[in-house]
Amino acid sequence: MLPATYAYTRHLLYCAAQGSCAEGLTAVLPCQWSYGALAGPLMASLPADPVYADWIRMFGNADYGTLVDETTGLLDRLADPHDDRGLQRLARVFDTSTRYEVQFWDMAYGLPASHGGEPGKEHALSCAPPESSTT
Image (cartoon, rainbow, N blue to C red; front, side, top):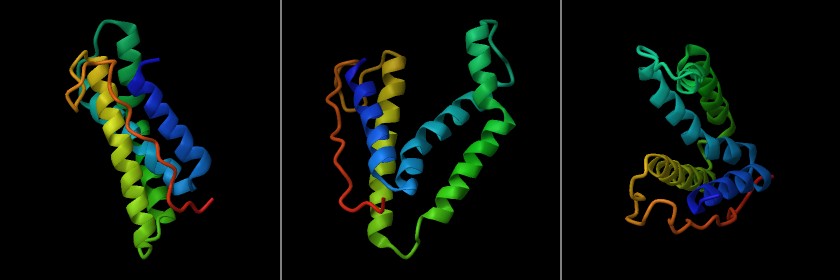
């Protein structure tokens, strides 16, 4: 497993196991959003390769968009808009997941890592434990 993938999965697992339900949802949301955003426009012209066509169909359809909307709605209900510290924690989790998601896609396309390193040789971002978890 490449360093960016390892770090990303450790981050997701840590947030899901040690964080609140809102933190776990926040951690996976950038992945959910990016898959739908990438696959949706490709639905208009599916490739001949069945592997790619199946991936696009799975993540580019309206049902998947509904799943992302439901996840976002659940997160909106779980997050306390009056808890500034909790919202800051969710923002950090989301930002970390987004950075890992960008590194993951950069790596998949063989592009230099977004922070300037070679693909597959990224320096993992730290997966620091939450300052305060509600689990």
